[in-house]
Length: 246
Image 1 (cartoon, rainbow, N blue to C red):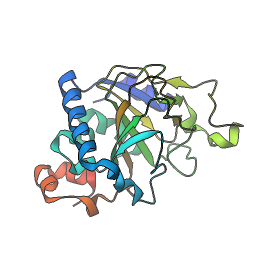
Image 2 (image 1 turned 60 degrees about the vertical axis):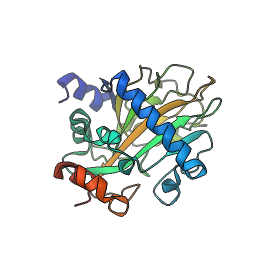
Image 3 (image 1 turned 135 degrees about the vertical axis):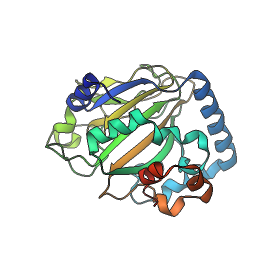
Image 4 (image 1 turned 180 degrees about the vertical axis):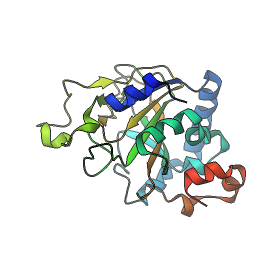
């Protein structure tokens, strides 16, 4: 499902745009559902993150969070069942992978900055990658609204950001910003150096992350623990395997 050029870019740079996989109507419906969930969950929004020892930023002050979206409506199924996304994950992790977590993150006005980091404790080289992420843009990502920054090619480095930079909060000279319209999807090897930037606008910058890991890794959110019968019953066996709930 990925072109030869897309696969080359993903391997070389550690990330690639998959284009606009969501229509404007889908984006609106998803954002409406998220607003509903934020109202329902209130102060408990994203609480599932707090229960997991594998979440790196469970109480991030600069962003709103929702978690366990797998079990919060069929509208979120596309984030871990889209064939093009699964093809990209396979290109990075191989055939044996599973969904680690499906979370919402919205950088708050004036906040949202993250240090450059990777999503795995140690650097991995020679193609033995353990984690891979996709970011689904629910707003236009522009230069000043907290767009994600990535340092191309660093997924192949033997070093981590803090081993190279004096201050991982500062801009890296080679970093690029993801800038694209709402509905776009980017896949990035989670061993690439990346992080959120400050949202200098007066609106939230919204996105959803479908995060995958190799089969031998623990999930950020134990899907077997959280899976509901409603979710299980609506999913084909193929996607139950993606969740690792069989």
